[in-house]
Length: 141
Image 1: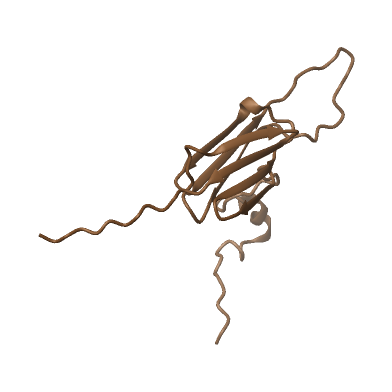
Image 2 (image 1 turned 180 degrees about the horizontal axis):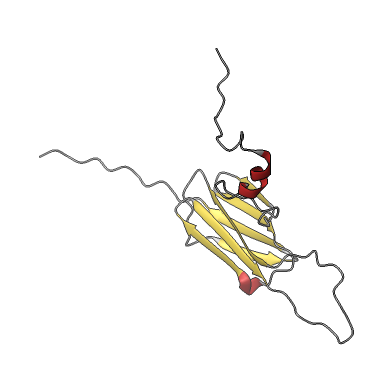
């Protein structure tokens, strides 16, 4: 079977114009990715347990939404603009802004009994599984 290649009309462009139009017609990917937080998800017979690392986030800035089997966790960190006179920032590596993760579970979550705790930069979610409703048989009249 012959190799299939994708034709790119700009690949054969004249060299001086190559840099001029680079990224103009194609999407440009910026060098910085959105920050993500790390999570562990565990399951037992009755519930899911989620541990998410959210260091430096205030408890009031964490938002959790549950929609059926989809769980969304979002958090926002704010920049502290405390700077003394005669002091300048040499390097800033801590990120500020909003992060969000959304994931789907195999079973629907009972949002009425779900709980969340935040301690020492770790968010713990306990997401009980919704009990399956008994099927109902209809009689044909």
